[in-house]
Length: 458
Image (tube, rainbow, N blue to C red; front, side):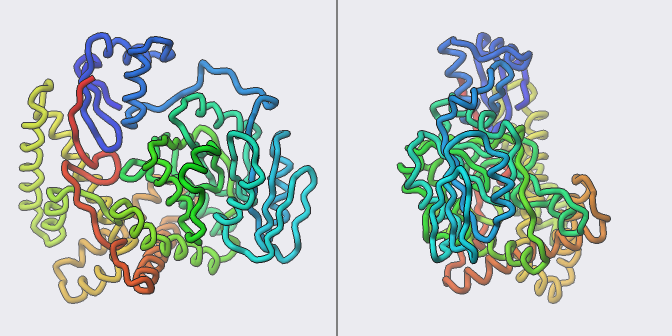
């Protein structure tokens, strides 16, 4: 969040918004930025709630003590299939809390000391396994942890602090790939799809973090029951579906990257490709239930038109469209100090984010259309090449660079294309192509922090 006009104007959130607050509210915000706690004031609490719900601020617990392990009212549910070594490692890392292990059709039946074991003779996927374990849970909170995940020593108490906010129904940590020396391990350490990065988020569709994986995930039992639990109809993408239903029901789902767990990467390249295609295969079914929330690109018509002109090698016309959108936005911000400067800043970042979002959509989902188009329309070749290679090159530049750029970029391109193969195959099989369509929104920007611009007062 950015503060302007002596903290009377707050800019941030996802989607982006501009919020004007009173003088007293501005002093409260400045106090928070100086490290003061929210306190007991009703007005301060209401302002904090608005900022939290808007994704403009995120909770910190520097003034909180840690929950004693003996006070944790949580049961751990572990779905497992043929992961005996990982399960043993996970059980050794857990504190003294109730644990339910669900054996989802392992070739060798699971044996786990100090845990209740439920055996499913036929594998039904992680969603079904988690629901089978849920039936044995008697606590208010449930922690779902996959057998190939290893949590840190304070994983449970650090995440459970979020439930001091009654609006929070679920919370997830950062899931890092386990570091190793092989090419696949080094690639996954930098580019794992389960690692959502270092920025905290209020999770939901059309936000900076649209979902969290349930490889490690704590949820209120009542909230899970309220939405009907994991949908057994999803073989993949069940975590995305659950999170979106929780948010639609009015709950808050938080991503807290200050808490980390490690996750085992796929062991072979074949398994790695299958995983990526499987992730893509969930998109059409998610689109049928959640509509445009699963769109491969989300941007305003302004941004789409500007970047289309650039792709067709009319950069000056594209720049003119972007400039016109900036003028329009400045009119909406006329009541704030320096509206033209703020409009230029917001519109500029919005168009840049939109451009990257559309390039990513080409690289992940639209490449089966873009590549033939580049063959028959030479004018588009530079734009298609930039879309396919630009994002992976930028990803490598921003990563820890555990791989050389040639291998990292090549694998990143294959990674994204494999996801697209899953989307297209599942779309064709289901005869539903809504997961391929972009979502045009009002305002400026993309599905990151600049999806839309609204002005509110508090």
